Length: 282
Ligand SMILES: [Zn+2]
Image 1 (spheres, protein in one colour):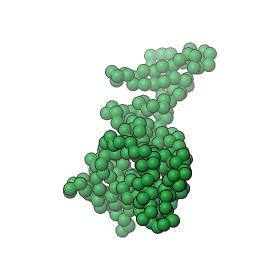
Image 2 (cartoon, helix red, strand yellow):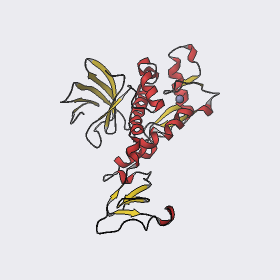
Image 3 (cartoon, helix red, strand yellow):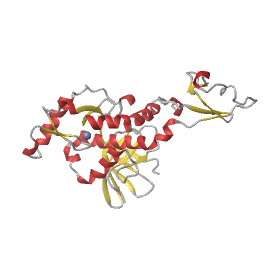
Image 4 (cartoon, protein in one colour):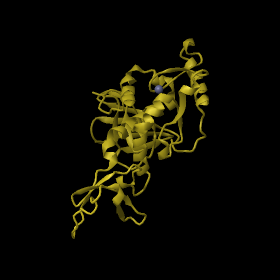
């Protein structure tokens, strides 16, 4: 775990040094915030500008655009229904920057990493946010040892409300909750079961921020195959990129850069409150 990096700014660039371990952040290029409101780019605008960039890689890419995550090739004109503009950071967390992505990848991510990463960032955006503020609520609560269907939420004044509707529980269930001088509540926050998706959400965002910065020069690196596999299969156990806690609520800079670990240079990206180190690591 890396703690308390020292950040230094020099004309838009930022360097950080870590006191622990052998991982050192060499430099981070400060990005325009992913949350600054930008005008939405249409999928055809994104496809056209990427297609022009892709042409610099050879004639075979004439009027072609490639999905950055699955590497599927699409005709800019004939396949418009097959690609879309997707948010780099989930919309629920205020993400305003767009990327070109194929429709299939966009909907695949929407159901997995984007959903849970978005919920996590939503909580992070609330100054007093806790797991109870998650949009997807846990359905079961144990009250004095009896498990019932119900909701737990935090009211505006900070008090906790427990709501156990009789009609959402089997007959007699609510009445069977043991009563007494003590009230013991326990529940498992829904997000706990989705740590994998949240982590892959950070990795997907970092990968797409790099794509946003340097386009296909990024995507065409075969060393990133394992990262793409990790993103597409939504499986953090694959040795692609890893997510490191920066130990503060929000980092002072958001951007792409490089880290040095065991004499190897890895691309990295600061995403909200985490450092994502990209590439297969020893
Ligand atoms: Zn795709």
